[in-house]
Amino acid sequence: MGPPDLCDRHSCLKPAPVRFLLYTHFGMSNVNQTETENCKITRMPVGFVEANCYVVELEGNTCFIIDPGAEARKILALVSSLSCVGILCTHTHLDHIGAMAKVAKGTGAPIFLTSEQRQILSGSSVSGFAARLGAFLVSKLRSDEHKECGNKLDFGGFEISVLKTPGHTSDSISFLCEAGVFTGDLLFRHGVGGTYLKGSSLEELRHSVVTEIFPLGDDTIVFPGHGPETTIGEERRNNPFL
Image (cartoon, rainbow, N blue to C red; front, side, top):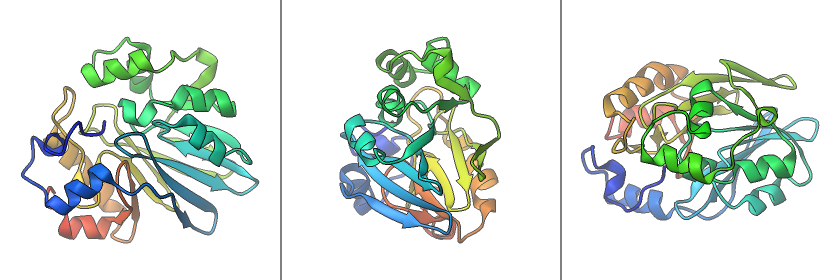
């Protein structure tokens, strides 16, 4: 979940460079695009804390969406000419799922959730105030609106590995594909997600980064939950929190 103010983001961590905190909080409002051989990725900051929503356009005029946190109309306008085959979420903080139900309804696409994410959104899991707030504000999902998010996803031959990366939240996951890794609020450029809410752990976050993200290779692009893209090599060398 995005920070309520500049100080709270890293309340459990040593101070970050001011330039990072200011950039992450106020961010860029511009849409950014990255193209690979088989996909085009559009990063669109949405909502007050500018959480990154990603639209990954595939061959055959299809796409999938990661973390539709706010501004459903803006997201739906971006995918209006595409057939959306799935909606994914890195974790269930409100700034990453706030528009999920509206976007699912507008696109007709299924929502892929892990069992823990589904429990949180159904209100059957006690995971702290932020998660309960998300479950309260996001429309309850019918059984036909979601599918199980296992270890692998395949959208028309475009393969995605689902990595369990707890730390920022207990239900945090990352999505690895040929373009790079979508880390949600696990890892940012020169920063990491806050570990000040119930269910979070700085030790667990660092373990997730070291065991699941760093082994992917220094040239791997990181698509974070807030702020600009980075690479694993850049964060291995210069991230002051790792």
